[in-house]
Image (cartoon, rainbow, N blue to C red):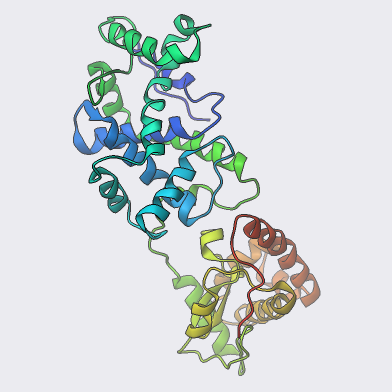
Length: 364
């Protein structure tokens, strides 16, 4: 578990307390926005509008692209979805374009502005827990503003920031602390964010890989694997269309959509004609129609590569099948291989469908 670096000049425990018992993602994205702003602008003063734009941009890919849920109480993800619809932004819009879109508006969307009336104040609540105890909710923001201004000059326990006319100002000692420990603070916040999202998306794979815009995918290993497999056997056909596959002309299809799995493990990839792969896109294939063909093709490829000069390409399958060696993989009968693959893929198809990925796709 991550912990924050100790400081004998700052009440670091109050900052850490803000990440406990969190019921929505606002605090995580607010703090990440502050960290990013400090890193990029090198200034202790920052406008609330800039931080809100960074928050929305931060949640964009997890919600719009990867379809992750942030829970029923969390409005931030819904705000990002509504912005995409209202502004006509695509699901893979670049981060800077999202920020720019919001900053260039004369007035931010109402739901985003409402976050600015709530999040900056409640983030500081742990700094003043005793003074706020029992206070009616309607008076909390005003009280926090007063306490933050007073604590800003406290030589013993200064508050993280105080409020300005258009945003916040980080205390000098906190600014120095953040600069010194920027990487650790970012990791601390992301670790808590991953745990929060995982609770709202049980059994969804690779949550950490879905927090940001996806990096350029590297399919070199998959290309090498299928190049060997296609060369070692005479006739291969597409599992979706029945079209013949040629070693020098095919695309690589993720049986479970890449936007769902966010990985390039070989047991989820098969070759297909480019037009077929484009047609399938991010849809979930009809399991009754295609799974057996998919498993048979995978099995056949594993056997071909196992008998080649490049058995090291089988590592993904060894981990999946819990095999200790290439001979172990070679000895697995097709029914057992198919059963293991089905046990991994079938539940994920249902989870992906529940997340909104279109299912039962059939090539026509």
